[in-house]
Image 1: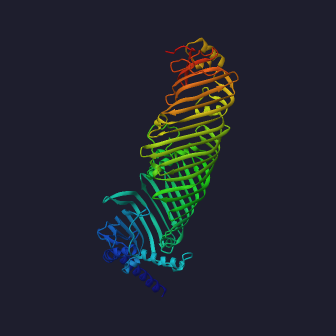
Image 2: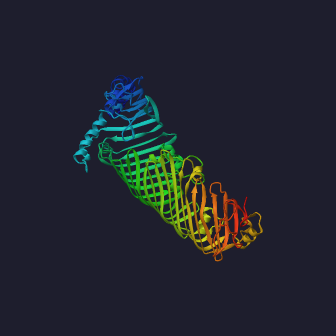
Length: 625
């Protein structure tokens, strides 16, 4: 009896195996005749909402997976028959359910698009998106979810969301294009990635890689409530973008409604701001920004406006804290806010927002202020310590403003050289050309240290003084600003010393007659009671209106011109005992008074250049012709 049962069991198993083998063998035939031709295109259309056309002959594979391989597949709009297709793929691989296929149905969990071309359009928001389908299960699920969200926007009933399956969509070696003058222009190439979304009411994620503007990029997106997000509700979102020029990430809550918003933590980092501007094709001159930048902030953004709170900004390894507002006005971004730094390289910061030559470059080329038409900027800055080249500043308060062709950077208050510094740099683009204005006021500063930092090491009184410089002129190119600038220079000095002058040796050499170099009498210093200099500047040449140095016994005066571009000198001067009048020689070398100058007055001419001046005595009452 048991033997009989065993034989029957073996026969039963054999028959079952035979039936399964016949079914498997019949699957390609069944699929090719009943599924591929009649059902897969329809099922894909019902799923996506687009008209699906399969031009190539389908092929069915049973092992290792039961799948259909479709060639020359296109997805297009139902309502716009003449419009280009939304998606074209050389091949589409669809993983099918074998049991559903035997029943004559289609059920698939994964679709692979091989070498797809996706066409997108530029939206009013500036983003590129493909046309939306007018129907299909995905669209209907979103419409249903929109009703659920509308019923209770703050806390929608997730149990009422559609649970239609979605599956996995993979794409390999694809590209994204848009229409430009009737031709396809490639936006993204080498597109690879996948979308994982098991069911419409479940979480979803997407990862994609590609090449954008010559750089490899990676985009990752995930949400625990994607259907709520697409229906206009608020949902958790995690987004990251990675590329060699820049990285960006966001983790928080987002809404895609008409009043959409973002609320969460955002981070941005770039090893070179100049490279980011060049790569993004923002229209801002890439030479107008240098250095690394990173930003981490709490972001709350909606309706074209964003607030960045508890913002940490690092510029060239200079960290700062503050708050920023971002918005759009007439199509241009508007950035306003306050930032506080412990240390700040002002030259690097300034070059990010004004056409200042980057460090290490002397900027001989044209000044490009076109960036001032593409951005509006209003920043308030403070720094406990700051540098401008070799100059060290403390307790800095500054502003940076860019708007409508105007770029202004002001240091309203700063401590330097044991005194106070105020300065302003202004670029104003006008129809006749860019005008540049520079102002500097150094009050109660150590004039010796100030002169050393400014490169004026010769015959600059050392002590406490106030210096004012104003320059204004056309700024077509960097090398033309100082050559064409007009303005003024003034300085007052208190008690101190005039270094680099041995006055007794100077008077002796001047009395002996003959040319001599100032270096020959430079080994000494002269205690002074004060000094005053006033000069008017025109086209790169300073004309001394007044230059007097007072010591206990003598008064030293100078007049004439000095070029701060060519660094040439053409000055006359004198050393007069205190209490005697100053008698300056005329252009022909004669004194202004008809009477001979007192023998005690020593007159001279200064020529050569700033780095190597020479002295030529002027005999009193004798014509210099």
